[in-house]
Figure 1 (cartoon, rainbow, N blue to C red):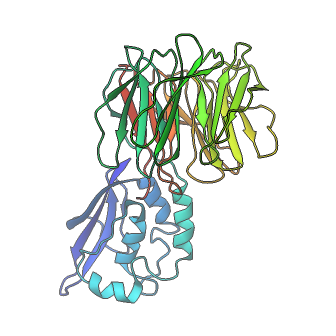
Figure 2: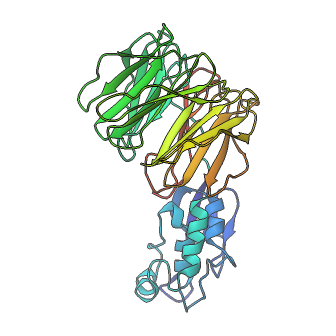
Figure 3: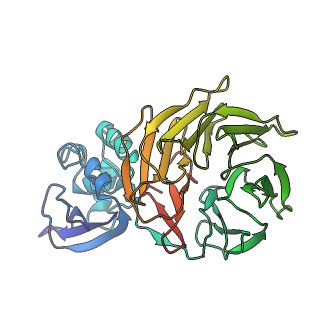
Length: 392
């Protein structure tokens, strides 16, 4: 990640200013003119990689000078993913009525936006403190709201949340738990959390919008932590690894639980699951070969298991920010965070970095933007957070 800057320079003998864009990693976009000095008028955290894409094809962001816009509109296009514009530049009052914020003839602009919006460019890791005896879980019950859960050194479930501007204090939710928790929200006033208890059975606790329930016995026997997702309102899909190392599944349909069902496989980690559509469930787990394995429900039947390769030392995490897109994460042999993406086809693996001591967990809390938040336990047993850069 970088800091993006825009500068204005006096055009001698006029009330007009030339503008150009630069980034903290040394990239400069002259925007048809001079590219050093001047007065800074924009400073915002952003991605120089996205800015570079927005400047295509010729460094002028598709602007033909004095036809589609001038340096102001060129700078605005390059700065698009920061959400900032150069409206403090002298003469902007004159160029805006002629060309608008981003210039005219926007075919290239829209094409560049689409390409840049799919780019995953990561912010720096941040420590959120706490002491974790497990990997964390995260859910979201509203836009830009994050609920994070973990097992403390006292074996109880702990919780803190991001309300869109700040983190709450951590709270103890009790229990005697022996696995990473898992959590999901199918409604703004609902959070469901499941974990394995001291009896190796699954236990369930929920938030109803005003208070937490007591822990409820869910049953089943799991050799790892469970996974929970939701493919519709008041629906819960729960997965766990049985004593036979196969994936098992049962569903809450709004009024009752289904019978448990074996989905096969030979698995060696907590599973994870996500639904990007009411007719879709995607499940991921580490196999006996330490590779990532995938299975999905298409509203009619379950697919076979298929391998996505890789070599992982933890269970995976998965999130989805829009229909048809999956972002999957895992801890590699180097203890770093690794990422693979599906958007019509699978990408190659990308190293995100960090020093993890647990499986990660991931969420997309603002749908239809490419924001992804990832949490894990660090080498210091504290809670760590990283997110990608996205346009707010």
